[in-house]
Image 1: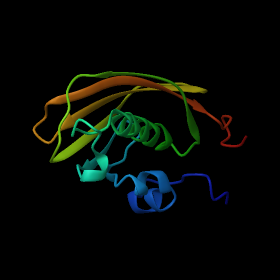
Image 2: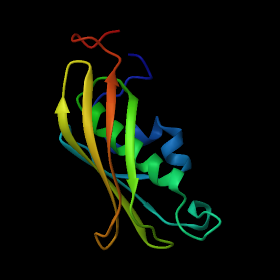
Image 3: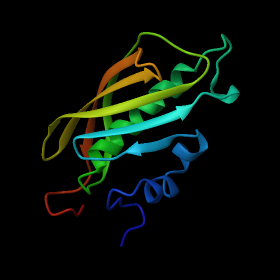
Image 4: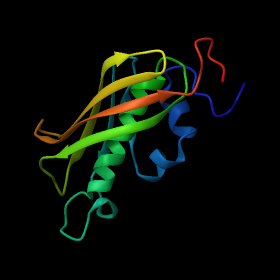
Length: 140
């Protein structure tokens, strides 16, 4: 089996094969082909010069959770394009990212992301187009 291929819905397996998510202290709390969730506890290395969560980390959460939702079908995807709107920010607590499937196609899957604080306040919202690297049989 190709070590770069994600198979199954095991959060521990996925994190052990995704060093970027581990490096950024992301936790997977839900994986499904329809909706996934990733969260992180805000810590000092997540903050920007203004003392709030860095926008790049919020974008990374959006990219991670939408990729996770796309890959939950067992195929390999990469980000094709993304749009994100930053609405608010925090400097403590948890930041929770939800990836909600909008459309799954043969080559492109569209996933909405909603990033919230632990109280449900919307921090960012966007959509990500994920391009499938596999053909219909699951091979390149």
